[in-house]
Structures are given as structure tokens and as C-alpha cells.
Image (cartoon, rainbow, N blue to C red; front, side, top):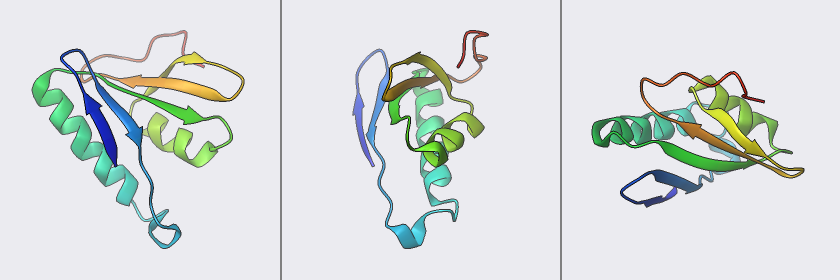
Length: 90
């Protein structure tokens, strides 16, 4: 997992799991730990997900992320503790 933290947000740059570890909750566990750290610092988490990766997108949505912007190939997603997804979520 690669992240970039600034004073305004934590950016999840990359999360890669070996195929044999996918679908076992490892990714969710890592993201939940990142969410706990972000909550403690009162920072949002931002990321981009490839629109052709529905499993990753579904994982992020299940963990409370919402789409903040999208293009033909990518979706930018955000999460912030205590904040609900806006109605404009795609």
C-alpha cells in the first residue's frame, strides 16, 4: 500500500495484493486501518480507481467511499469519517 499524506488529506496511491490474497478481506483490513488513522487526524482519504476494476470499486463503496469525480477511465473517490456520501455520487 502506498499513501501520500498532506495537511488536507491522505491519498491512497496504490493498493496491490497478490492474487492468492485477494477476496480474503486483506484489502478491507488495510483500508479500515487507514480509515482509523485518517479519522484520528480528522483527514479525508482520497483515491482513484480504474473503472474497469469493479471489485476494487465495490470494496471502496462498501467501506463508505463515494465518487467525487469520474472520467471515462477513472473514478476519484473520497471518504471522511462522519460525513455521508453526497447525493451526487455515481
